Image 1: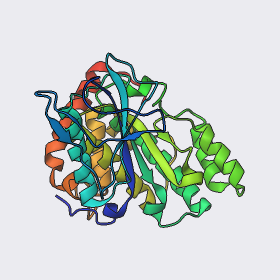
Image 2: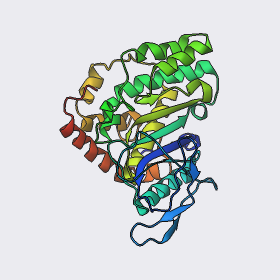
Image 3: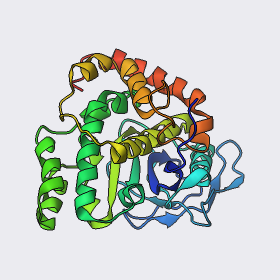
Image 4: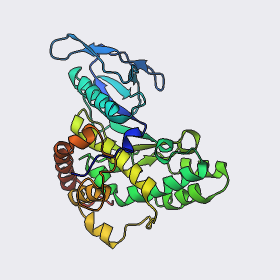
Length: 312
């Protein structure tokens, strides 16, 4: 396999895990955007106390989210700012913690990955943020079937994680080229809360991947995070940008989700011989790729069976 992406190890990111937890699991859930620190919980199997993992002494937060349905307590776990091998390892440990306390997911749950654009492009310049966003939107559109396919679920028809609307092509062009910041910000907001949320791009230098389905699987979370960071790293390196609509080669390589995820791996240098490093892969995202790629491919095949005619 290609060497790890050392630049990706410095990317700042965060993860939100939407779940349903048992009422008596020992986790206090705060109000929306007023989360309570998660210090520990009760093991579902025997009721013993388990300590919640932290990252750099920073705890995750548990907060309510009205979009989550299910019998139990709606709980969105929000990570601290993560980075590097230790950050990814801490993320995997926390996913294991959610399993231990009996957290579950359903089709109302999502897994959101927020990435710091500034930590990727090395700048908070609004023009450079806009240029990056346009490249990322184009690349994500080309790989939409693999992004949604790896969930195995119908996130593309969910109102909180919908596909890009037709006007996004022009909106991201405005974000890149218009000289006025307020117009750039308006265009970012107009893109909506779909596959990628650009609303905080100009105010905080952040983009949020919303296409991923809720999960308590370490393998799924690893592939989702690797996809988000890998696509962002690729967007930062792209010099010649193609059209928003897929070309004939891209269409041929994304006829099914199973084909599309293989195309994604090749495009990011996770497989094939086109790149000298695996963009977005570092730490366990790199060393465990051969394990979690199997789960991603299984889910893509599941997606193909469920949604063979998805307009992606």
